[in-house]
Image 1 (tube, one colour):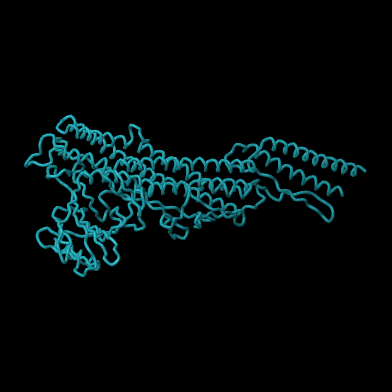
Image 2: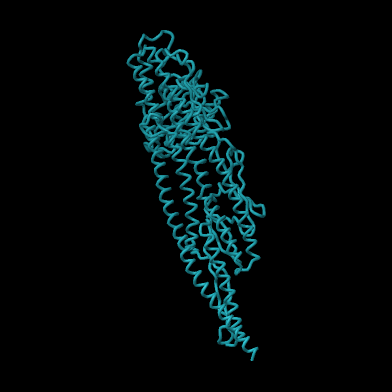
Length: 621
């Protein structure tokens, strides 16, 4: 090797060592910087023929395991999702109260029924009557408060979604900006590695908000997609749009129909202005945004529905009266029922048997005063086996008869109005069916109607009848509106006195016993829409049994959410540790590298000094 080659090799060595020393210095300086990935110098030998003539820096490498990084990105989304769900479930369990605690809705309900039980032993006691009403008010107020708290949590999710969308858009913009910068920078420029660190930081922020997939493209650029495959950002960023509706109520529901939707929806706007509804398409499956959507549109509405089921069951159990129809001897045969006292939401019920197969069929006719709500689905009642027919009563009984004959004529049923407010239900004389039962269920609207049924609880200021309108069932949000009848508060004796002429005897147990039995031992069927029971097997049982099931389910859900959170956190921490072991800065390792580089630098400097001395000697010769 000639002196020129030696000098050139030493210079290249000094330059490479100097670059490596600056990288080591940067590693040490950023040892505690979140998201910083350890850098190293990629050196390539230079040769001329068979002889090495030096070294050059081919690039600045980031020391990371791409597989672990991808796994960490995925699990970061899952961890954020699990953390947020667990937080909301814990808050929800706090609203319901722990089983047996003094603050739980179950305890408050039991205090109410205990007061009713005391009234059955001494119905004429003014103190007992007032105790019942006081316990009832406490119960309704707690239901009101619980409903408000559930809707407050839903409002929090709406605000959380708006904030998450803002954060996601900032991250998307920054990723696109960095991709553009990387496109104009050489890969052996140390700036490129720094920009990639910054981009990874924004990708990590985005991963906490939604499930994403990162695809590396040319020139160190990266494209980011949702887990469902929708591109979010490349060199240009899409934008998320969210039309927040602020404070939500029980009637605030998401719908794919914009005219029916009363909560915010999440839309992705691409750089070419194309739009995708990410909720309708299920575009986001994990991360904070997915957790917010699940809570807002599924878990919390279900919790509200459970409270509404309790409020509706209490109201209907005390106010609804079913009167069996009068048999009509045939042929044709069937039943007459009086529908004059039916309110919107009240029902006519009939059962018939198909003689050919021996199959029993149940038909529930529901009075509907809002034609826009028609037709009704069979799921309008909790009974999974009945055929539900919604009928508009506004045009009189002749119209009712026509609607029923049109809807059920093919079932060999015939309806007519023989007189007054009587609805006659008979077979068509073909001997195909046999009507086995008929009845009408109406809501008592006065305190002295002559029977034990009474409007103990009201929907705000009106009797609860279970009406169905185009806005949904009356039960929706009832827990937030239920009150004790103010006429009852003004005259507590109506807890015992159920008629005025002739008045019942003093100490009559008819109404107190009815109230107590309806609320403690009467079996009711609850709608599976609240998440307890199923469409094919809805929950049937007493109100206390439903309360216990409701509180137990909430506790189990909260515990399951906590278990998922703990497991997911463990996975994220484990992956983060693996990532840090590979990509984090170990100061001791860097110090060892620093010593080696210093020695290399000194050796190259010594070569240069020797070459200089030799050149000086040659010049002197």
